[in-house]
Amino acid sequence: MRRARAMIWVDDSGIKAGAFAAATLPAILSILSILSIQKIALRQNLSLIHLVESVGANLMECKVEMQADAGGLHLNLARLSAAGIPAISVLHGPSTAGGACLPGLPGHVIGVRGNGMAALAGAAPVHAAPGEIATDAELGGAEMHAAISGLVEHLADDDAHHIAVAHDVMRRLDWNRRAPAAGPAAAAPPRPPPRRAPAPTCAPTCAPTSASGPASGPASGPASGA
Image (cartoon, rainbow, N blue to C red; front, side):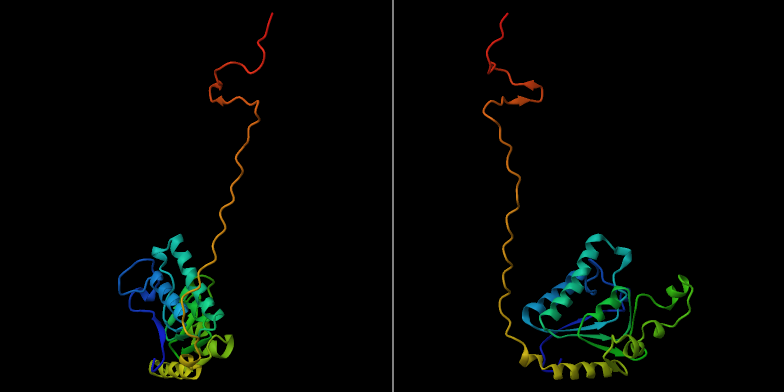
């Protein structure tokens, strides 16, 4: 961005429809790479700009660990908001499932007319499952979100225009001047030591036993007599 310090995260829809993956080709941002981008923005008080065009997680590679890491993407966006650090989403292509959830968290969303789309699923799955007929624009088009859902605050005419709108939003935010100086991250509070159950105690009169029975040795009581 012109004269603005920011972290920029771009989905590459040309590879696997911009799907997030745990570990894949270097050309694709893995979930761990995106988490690193978000953490740098948090640590350095940098505004975050996300160009969104993604189908979310790659379900063909989905594992429990991957879902846990993907939850961190949403958590970090919430942390940016809590810290007052600006985050901008540019919805410039079709985004479904997890890719449609992420634009809902930043404070500023720019949608591109005719191209931007955010919905749980597109028109084909909606027709195949519940049998309803709808268009992608009706389900989650940028114009619908600007007029009905409120997800989109700024409408752009095309890709060149959305870049200009993003520049204008950054200029009005003036985050370079308003941002507090980045300092060392505060250390996490120490964790309390784990609580352990007290060791069992034995009365003085107890005799040690083994798995095979009482331990050998002299009896502790008087010998029996006739």
